[in-house]
Amino acid sequence: MEKPTWHEDKVWNNMSTYLEVIGDDKRVVIDDKFACMEVVDSFPLSQCKKQDMSSNTAFFHNYYYVFPSGHSIPDNALVGISLNGITSDVPFSYSTTGDAICFWGDGSAVAQVGIMAIERDDIVAVSTLYVFNHATRSPSEHGTGLEIINDKNEIVFSSERPYINVLKCGSEEKDSVSTASTKPIIACNLGCDYYYELYQQSHHVSPQGVESVKRPTYILKNQVVSIVPRFFNTWWAGDSQAPEYNPDTGEWTYPDNGGPEYGGFYEFDAYYTYGWLIGTIC
View 1 (cartoon, rainbow, N blue to C red):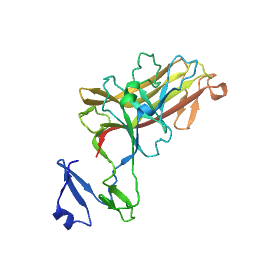
View 2: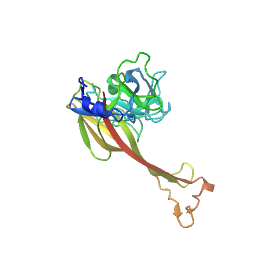
View 3: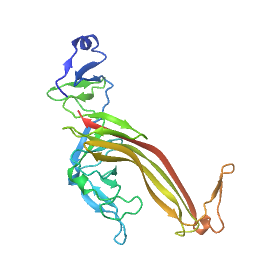
View 4: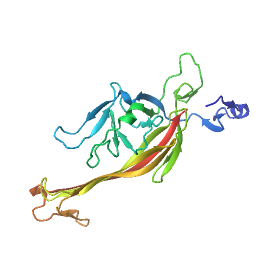
């Protein structure tokens, strides 16, 4: 942000309500309810250790990039990776666990099965992971910079802290954002859609069903990132018959020799949280 212009009439007339700062032709309003997320951790993905989570006898790979020691993702945090420097236009999706990141998409010359995580060493070599969260702290010892203090004596804004600046966010619709910036352009996943349904007549025999995940997918080309929804599916195409559910009685009717007593089962799970955010740091 360029040097802000201070509007003293607004500051003095409304000091008890808000402070108004204008810079780069964009207005920022800060008061004691200010709750923008700030950077609480960041590190180059090149510091991660690649691990294949598949078994030694598997004919597929399942790659995770494990965070360096001392780094993890706290609950309720927003996580993103920088797009600057990524030159490949091969689409990719990613997800994070508490201490690792993995990528989804077309494998790097390696046949993949279903929704197994793939290698994306090209992204890991140049990208940085950012963790955003709400943070409070005590007033600085020397009282330098600009600090906004709420009625609990917590610092809710400090000019020395880097905050997320949301450029665009969305859900189902396709969209695009320019990545031509000297600041990091950061892609954050807000959620994904998940659907799982599987049934089999007896244990490990002819399973039938689907596991489907819809993830935000990022495509980089000509200094523009396009965001599109993409499904990653694993299908089971056996001949097991699904049990039937009676909503009036709450009971299941299984096919002959297909009940739990014969090792058969039915599983279902679903949630719908798909969303994405592109931001930078201010």
